[in-house]
Length: 70
Image 1 (cartoon, rainbow, N blue to C red):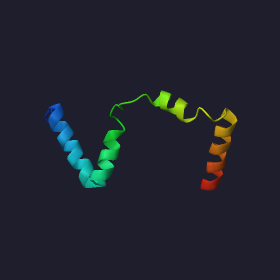
Image 2: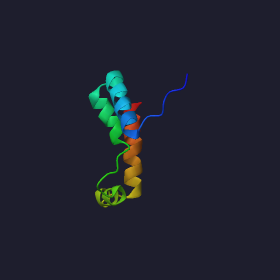
Image 3: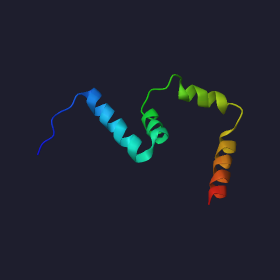
Image 4: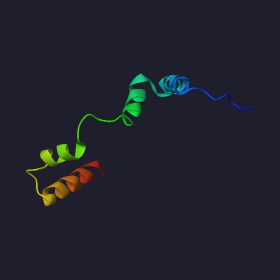
């Protein structure tokens, strides 16, 4: 049997309802938010955030955190 084609709005409502039942409202919104467009420039934010760090310092910090996870 073939499902009738739904409008985008109907599909969105059904999927949000399904996800909410399966993983909860908080996780549903976390999932959906990864597809929404942000309001800022991520690359410029990262450049500003890391402007006082050398490449080697950043790499060493990554390695340090990876060791702590293991």
